[in-house]
Length: 337
Figure 1: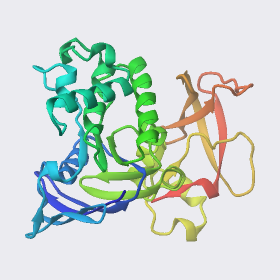
Figure 2: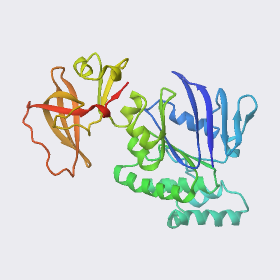
Figure 3: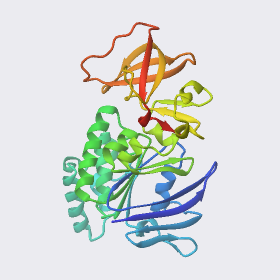
Figure 4: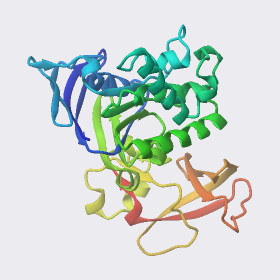
């Protein structure tokens, strides 16, 4: 299985330009709202038409400007919409049967098989409005896979689910994707979601690809400020606001750079060689399910600095309000843009 995309599409505020190729793997397309993510899926699926370029699926050209533009149903693409797009007037069994080939009996048998595979045999005669969010998504996945697509396109499939259900449905989806072994393109605004589900990450910003690669590369070595911020780097400082910090950097390293980025998990209290020294004043501590966050002000600029710890860490430092703290950050871990 493979997908190769090289297209342009003029949108209202910018031109979407995408040039990439993937094999039998899961690719996450990550970006802010309005960055062109969903439009990219629609171009691949044939719902929208590029202004120029080519789209190839398994070495078969599906779109070539002025020459070929296969209809959606001929591209062998499965598309999972945000709202699942189940037909409300049809039962679950009918929702699957209507897209399948064969006579009535054959389609009913095949549809029943897919519903059983997705643990939906108990609601095969139910209408979509009576299903839970997880059941709706599994039904939409079953309908998408029952026509044996070569590429799966998933447009923010968890956006309508609450937190508890989202985790369950995401696990179900990952299990399905491991089983079917297809080329998958997942659109999401959540980098955490992308890292859990996909092996490769593509980051879009205003219609442009600003990073693309294996997920570890994008996470550890983002190529742009936008990809660093989407990857979760919380401390980003412009040179004009922190000239004292830039003055501590080797001239060759900082030449021509305007933004300094620090991962919140790499600070220490111990002074070492080849580290950046940050004079801080403690503000407060907060936490979520995975991390504890210490929030400081960088003195004298007053900019916010976030320092994070794993919740499993045995001895967290204790600070008083407005206490002065010197934090140290390894130069080799600094990102500059």
